[in-house]
Length: 432
Ligand SMILES: Cc1cc2nc3c(=O)[nH]c(=O)nc-3n(C[C@H](O)[C@H](O)[C@H](O)COP(=O)(O)OP(=O)(O)OC[C@H]3O[C@@H](n4cnc5c(N)ncnc54)[C@H](O)[C@@H]3O)c2cc1C
Image (tube, rainbow, N blue to C red; front, side, top):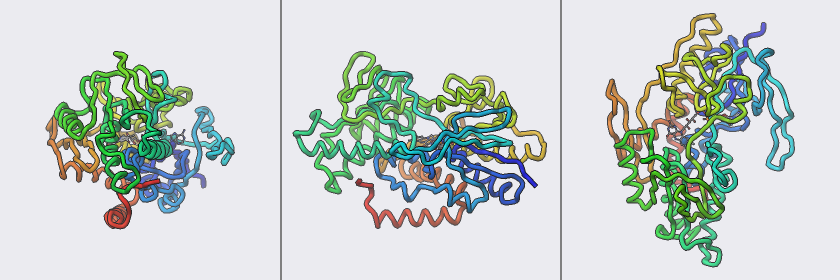
């Protein structure tokens, strides 16, 4: 007997949690065939990418191999990159997969579905700013994070020899004062200290300048004013040059140029100023908004096709009149839970439930220095303000909750123990 096939495209923060849950509730019971499609062979939780970029996260510890994971959790993994969709025949077109030398590893293929879930995340939005694609790093994928780490170490090494220096100080420009930019800025200061401690370089703190550049009047514009001000002060006290009300109109190999024609000399540039869904989503024949996000009903079904669902950063799910679910890990985690129920209900021909986002608060990590944020409790509109070790623990628990959703409690507990042991056994940073 054939069972319906549910294809999930994208094994990220939302897609992997959904595949794990559906594998357990439907796949193992042979009520549906669950297929997870991802262009990569492994999963790294995206909020860890700034740590991967600076080398303080060793990806082999935190990477999940889709093949091994799928065989233990009742779903099937297929490596592939979605590039086209035929809604009439319910068929996905998968682009060929190439290796680093451009040789084909997997050919162009097709895959049919009965229900489709799009959870393929987002990419940085450069808003067409000249020079950004050529001269800025993006931290959207593990590959890009590792490329940044390699360039960062090489730049530090270059500064150990005065003859190879481009400027008097080693300068990193981060465009975008959202959570990604803020967390990366703090990690970079920590990395400067670690590289010296391990004897990789002799560039000390006062020879390194980190510029965090935000177009809005304050950093962390999506979070409360109190969090924003606290983080701003803390970053400045650590030595970060925080520029607000500063739009970048051009990126060059050795500088960022502001809207007022100020030239900020830089050795490394990172662009983290806003997100959009991948461009090809606008060509699938589904209604999308101007950020390419698939427009949904509140049940997370596409407004054009009830057999197509979407969640996370690539989706625009309405909440009330003028608002939509924000592109955040906690939001996609909640969506994966409701979508798992809704797909079960769809198979039984039952009515689907609307998704209602619950903001549990926001936390920003400032590397080993601090963490700041708020937790929402009851009906409080501003939440409970947290700083220091409480905020740091709450921040760490977000990742542990993700691990519980994909590994279960016992394995997450063991991973926690291994992480603690590794702090004693391994260097704090990956140095190559
Ligand atoms: C550095 C950083 C820090 C962050 N910190 C936080 C935080 O502290 N708190 C918070 O709530 N949010 C944070 N976020 C945002 C959060 O990571 C995202 O909102 C969340 O990961 C979105 O989940 P997703 O499942 O939609 O997409 P993702 O987790 O991005 O997963 C997308 C998946 O789709 C796959 N994919 C992409 N295109 C294709 C294709 N064509 N075919 C097949 N597979 C494809 C990718 O390989 C990936 O596995 C952070 C983001 C970054 C970059």
